[in-house]
Length: 101
Length: 119
Image (cartoon, rainbow over all chains, first blue to last red; front, top):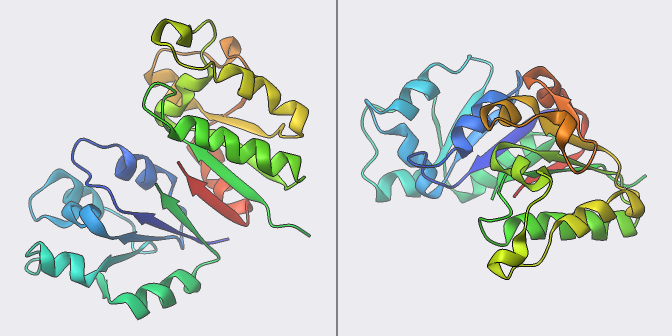
């Protein structure tokens, strides 16, 4: 069963992203919201890890969190930017959602 | 058929309430006979270390809750092998018999459950 992993903590000084990346299976997805979108900072270590993800892992981020942090340039080509209705639709597109609280 | 739940515990018992909250969910789920499994990941493996003394910090002992898990029918306990090794721990010396899993095993465990939550 496919899993959408939902992250909302900054990857800097926190292990959630690292552990999550190790547990992804083909067909799973990653949705970054809140401070977790900081992982998309160009040139950062977490960004390099995201860029190295296999193509069969979908990558999403909540658009308003990107906009609020000025993260609009040099985003990964495959990143899907979501508004709230798309967030809901995305959560339904996977068998389950695992929130990393 | 009730949906199966995987609870992923990744916080140390010394890092605030989440460790206790995860065990409370497990015990409540067990009492209602929900099919659930517990996975100890990252600092969550510190919950399984024997001979800790929470009374030194005037905290309650979580190990009583841990030992209650099998009594509540929660006997699917798993632990991340890598998290143990990183922290110098051994699966043989834990307070509960948790089944050690490598990363492929962890991915399969998550995939086979209907729902999962990480605390």
